[in-house]
Length: 358
Image 1 (tube, one colour):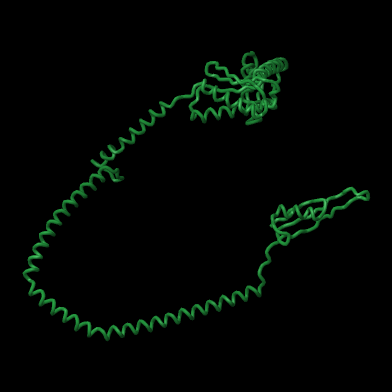
Image 2 (spheres, rainbow, N blue to C red; image 1 turned 135 degrees about the vertical axis):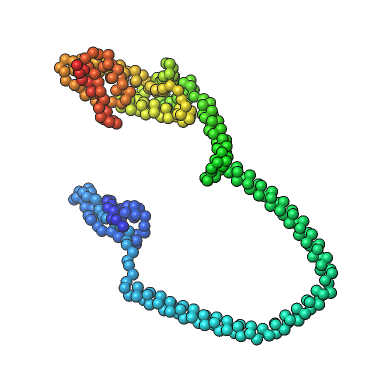
């Protein structure tokens, strides 16, 4: 067990903390005092008591105890072997006695068997006619049963042959291969029907997405203790759900991190509700942050592009989210003589503005 280190105002307090962390009784714990709590002359605590503790390891058995245990096990093993040997000897003696008794009884049994054979011959002679008639009747019955049995066997054979023809086999050739092809037709039909069902799955429209997202955003803001009014706008295939109110900074976050997280949650909710069949794109805005951010980024991108045109030196902007980088790319694309590229990966991906190569 590894050592742990605890501190406290006193050694007892440090020991109680060690007992709580290890979860054992006091007699099962081993401790070492590292420092005792000391106080200054004015009674103020200067240092805390410190100790380390661990669960007391179980001591191994001594060599003498192991030897005594081995001796006891050896005696037990020898006593069991002797008992097995004695029981085997008794079994052999009993078997010999039974063999001797069988040999003595054999003559009596042979005499009794001969008498039984004589009685059987006499009875067979007296009842020959009756036995012959019964034999003829039994042969008739047997013939009828054989006929019915053969008929049943034939029907079973036919049933098995039909089942064998219906089931596809790996060793198919000639007619067998044609039967296998016919057996796969229902599977192909099922595939076509499942394809039609997938095609018939309704795609969630933007109005339904707006209703689901508005309820989600409103409930989330209520749980955060923020008062806001949530509304949505649809522009072609783009849906924007916006919350307007006062003091919504907590829902925006630093550099819009919280509002972007809310947008991702809303998109996940819509995708799960529609089984991945949702049209258009979805964006959530809080307090008009995205509009203000687009305006700021567009002005900033124009300023940096003009600086590149003046001195010819490229500018690498700070890392941005994908939606912010798109604003910069679109703004700089309208300015002649400069171009943009994205460098880096993940959270360090940024836009670089440079002169356009002639």
